[in-house]
Length: 469
Ligand code: PLP
Image (cartoon, rainbow, N blue to C red):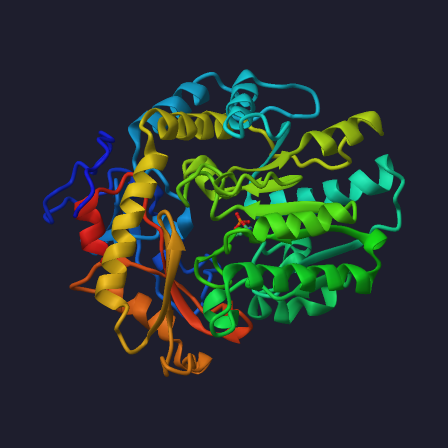
C-alpha cells in the first residue's frame, strides 16, 4: 500500500510540464567575454553539461526548456529541494545586516551560536561541540588534525600516528581526506602525495563479501577480527583512530552498515584507546531516516563529520562534531585547536543551515524520509530485482543504490571501459525521461563495479517516488 504522505507543505508548486525557462537574471550575467562558458575548468573537459537556469522543489529547469526531476538532490545535497523560500528569506535577512562574513579570529556571531546549539541538541547532547567548515573535505581535514592533536598535544601519546580506514571509501578530495579514502580511481594520480600512515581494511559489503549462509553476527565478527588484526600489525598504541562511512556513498553506491557492525568496530577502537570516527558527510543529517546514521544503532562516535544535508545546498557548509572526551582533553591541554581557515563559521552559512535544520525538524521531514524510503525500496525491488543486470539493490531511508552486473549469477561487473553507470545517467537525463541519476564507478567490496544512487529530497511524496521508480 502507498504510505500516507506527511503533509510537508513543501511539494513543488509546478505540476504542469509546460514551464517557463526564462531566467530573469541571465542577461545581467551574460557577456561576450564568456562564450558558451568555455573558461570554466569543468569536472569533465570533454563533456557539454546542460545549463541550469532555475530550480523549484524536486525540479531543475534547463536553458533548453527541459524540466529535470532531481532524484539525487544534486550530489545528495538539496535535502529540502530547490527554491525553498523560507531558507532564502532567512539568508536575505542575514545578508541585510551587512555581515555575511566575520573573522572568526576576532568575533563570534549569534546565528552561529544558535546553529551549534541546535546541532548539539539534535545529538541529545551526546556530542559536545561543533567545528564549522565550508566543505566535507575541509571537515575531514579538520577531523584528521583534531584526532592527531588529541593524542599529540594533550595526551602526550606522540607514538600515535596511524589511521585505519576502509578500501571502498570516499572521504574527500583534499590531500589529507584523499589519503584516508580508499577510492582507487580518485587516488591514483596523487599517490606520491598521499599520507603513508593510513592502512585500509576491507569494507563491509554483504552482497560482495558475505559467505554463503553466513549470519550477520558471524560476518560482523569477521570484520571486527580484521580490524583487531590491523591494530596488532601496526602496534595498538600507534593508532589514532578508525574512520568509516556508516553508509558508503560515492565509493560503493549506498551500502549500509550491517547491524552490529559499528558497535563492534567501536569496541575494537576503544579497547586500544583509539578514536572511533564517522564520516556522515553524505549519509548524515536525516538522509537515512535518522538525523545521524549512528543514532539508529546508538553508537556514539568520538568525532563525526557532516556536510551536504547541513546547508542543503543553500550555502557551502559542513561540520565536525566533537565528543566530550576530545573537547575536554584539548581544553585541558593547550586550550586551542591548532587549525583555522578564513571562511569558517560564516553568519550567512549559519543562517542557511539553521533555517534548513529548523524546517527539517518542524516539518518532521526525517519521518517522511523513513516512510517514502520504504515505498522507494518496495518499488525498486518490485520493478528491478529480477532484472538480469541489476545485481544488488541496497540502501536506507532516501539513500538507495543499484549495482549493475554483466553476469548476475556470478556477480561479474561490466568492464570499466563500458562506463555503464555513466551511460545510464546520460540516458536518464535525456528526453523523454528527464530525470537525473547519480552514477558511480566505485570499487564495490573490492570489485570494481558500476552503480547509480537515488537520493531525492526529503520533501518527496508518493507520486514523486512513482516518477523515480
Ligand atoms: N565524505 C564523504 C562521505 C563524501 O561523500 C564527500 C563528498 O562526496 C566528502 C567527504 C567530501 O565532501 P566535499 O565534496 O563537500 O568536500
